[in-house]
Structure formats: C-alpha cells, structure tokens
Length: 285
Ligand SMILES: C[S@@+](CC[C@H](N)C(=O)[O-])C[C@H]1O[C@@H](n2cnc3c(N)ncnc32)[C@H](O)[C@@H]1O
Image (spheres, rainbow, N blue to C red):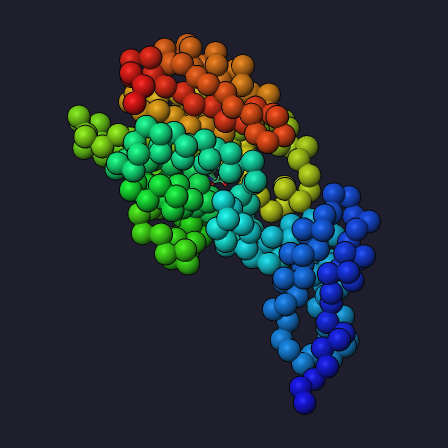
C-alpha cells in the first residue's frame, strides 16, 4: 500500500522548533504546517527534513509565516499575499467593520460608490464589496505589484464589484462623480502612517518584507492623512481612515482646521485605530 508519511512534520514538531523564537505563536506553527502540506507525497525522510528545516529557517530569519504559505485571512476571506505588498493586519478589520456598519445603517442596501486609496492586497476593497454587495469599489495603488496581487485576489474570490487601478492617491476622480451624482461616494484608506524616523527602527521582518512605500507617512507620519482630509473637505465625501495609536488628537486638529468633524474609534486592544472625517457642510446621511 502507499508510502508511510510518518516522517512528515506535525504541529507539535514545528511548534517545538519555533517556540523559543521571540514573538512566535501557535498560529505561526499552524501556517508553517500548512506550507509543509504542499510538500510532494512520498518524499524520503532526508528530503522532508531538508524542506522542513528550510521553512523553519526562513521563519527564523524573519519571513512571516503567512508569506511561507502565501495566504492569510482577512474578514474571514482568504487573501493571497506576497513579499513587498503590505500583509493585511488584523487591526485593519476594525476599519472595515465600522464602515460596513455605517453603510448598512445609512443606506440599507441602496447603491453606494467607494473609493479606496492604497489597495495593497485588496483586503479592504474586497471585503467591503463582499459584505455590502450593492456597492462599486474603485481601489487605487501606486504599486503595480499590489494591483496585480489585488486583481488575483478578486479573481480567486469571485467578487466582481471592485475595480483595481494603478493610480496615485492624488489623481483626479472622474467628473461624473462630483457633479450632483445621485450615488453617494465614500472614501476609505489605510495610508502609510509611520513617521520616517520610526520606519528605520521597525523589526527586520517588517523591513525585509513590507514595502517602505506602504509604511512611510513622512516626518510626522501624517503626510497622507493631512492630504486625504483636504480631499474630504473639498469633495464633502465621508472619509474612513486607519490611524496610528497616538494619532487621534492630531487627526482631530487636522479635521477641525479643514472645517470637518471627526470621530475616533479604538481597535480591540483599546488603542485609537479608526477615524471618520466628515465635512461640516454635509448633513449626516
Ligand atoms: C498601509 S498600505 C495599505 C494596504 C491595504 N489597503 C491594507 O490595508 O492592507 C498603503 C498602500 O498605499 C500605497 N501607496 C503609497 N503611496 C501611494 C500613493 N501616492 N498613491 C497610491 N498608493 C500609494 C502603497 O503601495 C500601499 O499598498
């Protein structure tokens, strides 16, 4: 009968190999085990040991376990991931949850248009489009690699109502959106928001695998927030932002200076994480 696969790694064997590494979790061991499940069947013991050791070594030198598997979960959806496209972070789910709740409360399934600035893997755009299906999402990113990966995720997940476009945050939007469009427009972004100095001190794993363009928010970390708030003030479109844990008071000031109101929400660790910015001129939907 078939070959004996007892020498293939188990969760216990992987966990005991990585548990001494700073910050390693059982979830990482599970991800590495998932990657090992792609080993061809019928390898001899030496070949399995070689491949397992190679996976564990890559993890030890800072490759996130999600990159070893090539997939992570976001809002319960499997998202393909790749080096140099920002890995979606669990705290970003809070931004999506808050926005979905508002869309459902204010629009109750009626059509809306959403502009996402900074697609990355497409995690935000695809989960909004999946869970508020009567929306058209347009998601822009300056990175061609990000746009290709987001498009791949769109095809895998079979979510048609999202268009990924290689474009800068600050390009003009189509005129038809601004001229008395009957469809309400929302803007959402998890922009780069880490101050340049702090970027240099990030963990080697982040520096090697995440793109700097996705992290660096300029000298005070607020370069993109500042410009996005100006867009919200000019267009009067509600803006949903991910923010750094210490940026809430700064966002409030930026919003006030631009003639907007803002509300700050914490993530599940109790840290400020999401801001909603609305122009004073708009009566809440
Ligand atoms: C923090 S990541 C967010 C990615 C994804 N939305 C997420 O939450 O996982 C920011 C993204 O903005 C993109 N980006 C940075 N500067 C940009 C610009 N000027 N125009 C368009 N996209 C930009 C980066 O390439 C990166 O994918």
